[in-house]
Image (tube, rainbow, N blue to C red; front, side, top):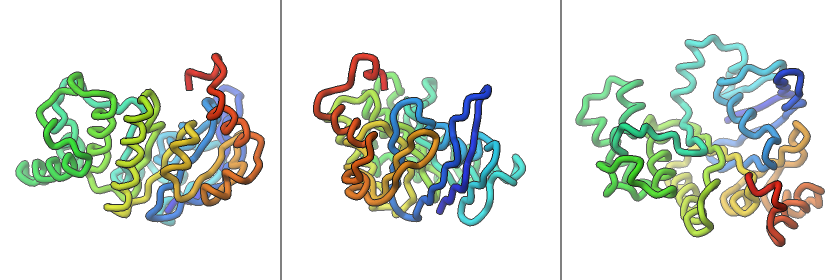
Amino acid sequence: MIEIRDLHKSFGGQEVLKGVNLVIPQGQITVILGRSGAGKSVLLKHMIGLFRPDRGEILVMGKDITRMGERELMELRKRFGMLFQEGALFDSLTVAENVAFPLREHTDLPEKEVQEVVIRRLEEVGLAEAADKMPSELSGGMKKRAALARALALDPDIVLFDEPTTGLDPVVAGTIEELIIETQRHLGKTFVVITHDLKTALRISQKMALLEGGRIAIEGRPEEVLHSGHPLLEAFLKRERYGAPREEVKG
C-alpha cells in the first residue's frame, strides 16, 4: 500500500531521517515504534505529502507522491484519514458537525446523506449518543473516538494514527487499542500507527517497525521484533518493568 525508499530529511542542518526503507502492507495494522524525538511524526507527515523529502521515494498505491504537484497531492490526501495526537477537534462544532466537516468540504453529498454517514461512523466508534455534545464535554477517550469517526468520514483507504493512546490512563488506552483493532477488522482498511508505547505496539500491530537513528532498525511480526534482542527493544522492556526515568516521562 505504501513503499518508502531511502527517505532522507533534515531540518536546519539536523538529519532526522537518514535513509528510511519500509513497506506498509495493505489491509493490516502497521505500527512504527520509536522513542520521542526519533522522527516518527516526521515520517508520518511524509506519507501524506505534508513534508517533502530531501531525497528518496514514497510510493502510495504505486504512485510516487514526491513527484506530485499540490493539486494531485490534495486529491491523494482524500484517500487518507488522520487521527492527530490530541484529536484536533474543532471546539466550536458539535461532535456530529466535526465528523460532517470533511464530507461538507470535500464532497457534494446531499445533507441527508451526510447525516447518514455521520450517524454510521459515530455508531462504529460507539459514540452515537454524543453526537450533539461539544468537544469540551467529552473525556479524553471520547475525543479520540470522535476524532477516529471524523478520520473515517470520507471512507479512506489508509488511516494514520499519531500516538493514539498518549495522555490516556491505562484502562482508556486499552479501550482505544481495542477500538483500533475492531475498526480495522470490520473495515479492512490499512492502518499506520506511530507510538512510543511498547504495550500499544504489541497489542495492535500485525507488522511492527522500529525507528531508531533515522532508519528502520528492524521490522517484522510483533513477536519477531520483540525477540530480536535489539538494544532499544531491551530498553523499552526495561522501561515497562521499572517505569520511565524522570526526564523521559513526558513521552
